[in-house]
Image (cartoon, rainbow, N blue to C red; front, side, top):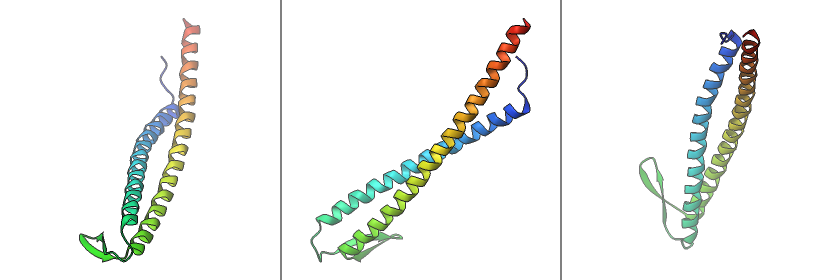
Length: 122
């Protein structure tokens, strides 16, 4: 088979980089989604507490007493931030996947044309 031209080599290198980045994004998204689930459980548990009951929140290695409403507000804000991050990661994931598909089509087309060229020369 004829050697791959420089453009195809660059495309393959980009494809490999995108694969690595996609794996990292997928891991980050999974961690973010897990944190959202944990916040949901924490919110559910704080909902079981009676009004005025002392609750504690973990801050920098210290348990700090806080009001139920304050903790729930903090949890809602934290969840919103994490959901936004998850959404951004999802968009990046889609963008990288599309780019990988485009590169894959180019490489496959190139390989097909190379194979057809060899078949005609035989």
